[in-house]
Image (cartoon, rainbow, N blue to C red; front, side, top):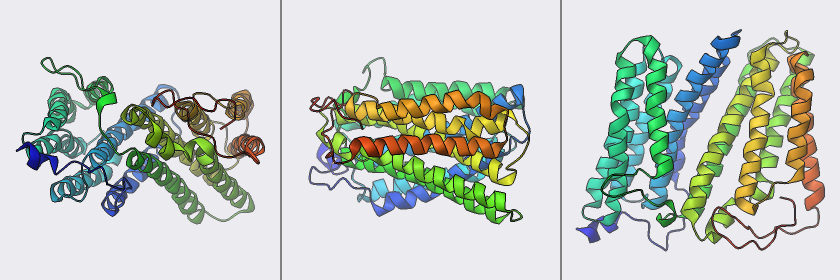
Length: 410
């Protein structure tokens, strides 16, 4: 029985690269990220508590989607994607993710039940299917842990979907907190304890590929926003300038992410003594990176739509807040790879923070230009410090690699 279940595991000779099945799976999340961006943009002229509440509702839905995607990335990193049962699981998850995506714009209203049904189908039923396929293999304890903890939060999800609208947000927030806490603690059970992350066997190259691909998907969504918004508005020279600055900002986000640390993520996971521990940390980091790009893309829409609109809290949140979050997350990624933070990112963060009070009283166009200038400064400092220097050896304190090089900027 255990031997038959072992057929599902990734063999040591596996290339570790993401498969076409997984790229197909990501198409559902292209739709999902677009819906998340639209919900953020629909906050309109909200201020104060209405803005905070609206942002929090959309953030909750995004975090639910992220949990589905991240769990799937770990499944295809631990199990052989060419196995029919794993392919069926991935395609089924894709369908559930698509349901969540199409219901997301009204998931906090009349479409709450189908959103939750699709979510629970993945969180509760999927691990049971994998556990059954593993038969007597010891690895089956992991999906059983997931199913047990998902069963704990399921009543809260269902109560929020079926109960009064005013209770939906607190009930779903509590349910999501349970799901994320279980993930952070390793899904501990009374008779088994917690699953030690450092003991997980994964394909490090594969997990790095998946994280980088999701970041690129988020960047692609931002490019889509730029094109759709600009093509759907009356042409004007100032909107054309906003269009160009928004594109430049996305290009700078790509450049800063992949400079050294982002480029070496795969190599770092390959070298790590505990790749699963580094992969788990990278999971949280890329959550922040993807969210930052989505928030920034909403800022593009606001600026292109009304470059000289009156100052509002929401445009400052999206135009400046997104890039701020990106730099913080990128600093975290660099620490995970090299055990340090470069001065260029600290300088960029300081420039944005110092410019925020001024941007708060200016028009959106000025705020976007300030953001692009700060990111360009970071990219320029990166280029100057790395010119003529070879790629350094990763020295991850998270993954347990030896600190070979610590005096160079990443």
